[in-house]
Length: 234
Image (cartoon, rainbow, N blue to C red; front, side, top):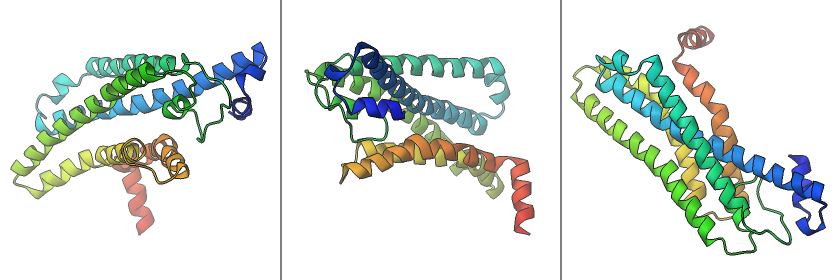
């Protein structure tokens, strides 16, 4: 990372062939990993919302539908799709000519920040990345909204408070992660930023802080964790 930042500060025309290859390799690696992480979270959140929908709206058929084989197919589909999406975005981002100063006002290599430095016409790359972004963002969000729409209807029809609390316990952690991830993503991509520093901080929030919080949020439903919390509060 540090070596890559040093190389980014120098124009490629002053780099040797070895340094230039290292420059491209580091940029490609950072960009691909960032896209892979973001796209994987989008896909897995959509699959998890489908799991919550089956558990609440169709509990009798849940064991028959969500078998180990079905879970494996869903996970494999997520990984294959996000790998292809990340590869396409990385390819169309780095196929453009970059000349002059290659410093970016960012903590890591992100497609919008890199495209701003392109010296050629980047319209085609922007359109491809936009269309891929629509697929990886709108499709999971639509599935999540549809799933929770059916869940809300099911909760409204429940007559017991215990049943509603059980639904909240089942969906609470997933819903919190969805709000944190997509909330910070909307702040960086949809809401206008007052400064570049604010944009960098929000990027760190959804790219670093949120994944670190996920294990803590999901572990709150663990019986051992609940037991330890009860003992600590006494």
